[in-house]
Length: 85
Image (cartoon, helix red, strand yellow):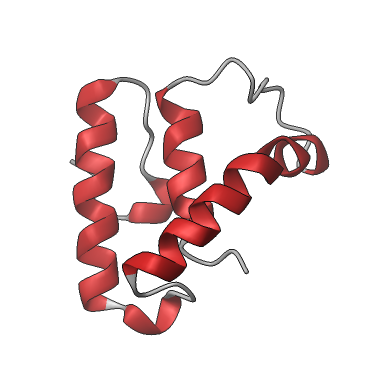
């Protein structure tokens, strides 16, 4: 398993579960990198980022349709929610 959260590739259910473990480890080891440290803030950001993720993909010129999500889309949403305001 690649231990670097930012470079971790999610492409199936197993790698998504590994990604979540890395995300939790990142919160414990680098809480200063998280805007949304408590569950309430994180869930609020998760909801907002889920609505806005297509804009992220469009701005970054990533050819993903967020209305047809895959495991990577779910990982992108969780990753974005850690910092989304």
